Length: 142
Image (cartoon, rainbow, N blue to C red; front, side, top):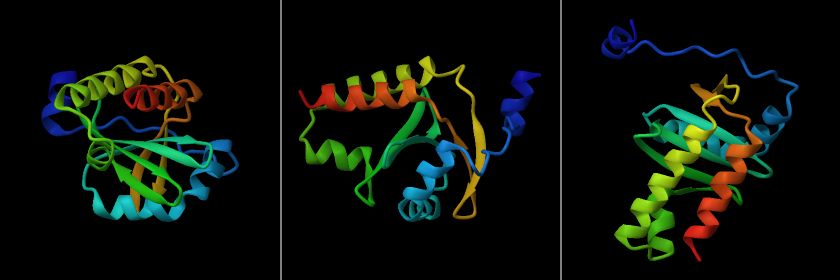
């Protein structure tokens, strides 16, 4: 049935993110830029809430995806990050590969759904994934 699901676009549905959860509190902190991103992007969004920020996987990770980083009240796309830090094509390839691996490492992490800015998003409140993405981003710069 998995093959037919791919053809007909069947999505996994996740339980709603509890309104009183720590993850919801973190999302509330970054609500405005997250809603802005939701309005701009047509792709599926998977949010990894962090302390005062979030990482958002766009599209279909781990193979075909982008990443947005919400921090300091703004959204930084992966392209913005690459341009800002003058990363070579090789560095960008390594970065995307490692981010895809990090996503796969968190495949067993619980996932929830949340409506943010009128768009259904998947929320992955995984401390491990959050830390791994942070590490990958900072290692890319050094």
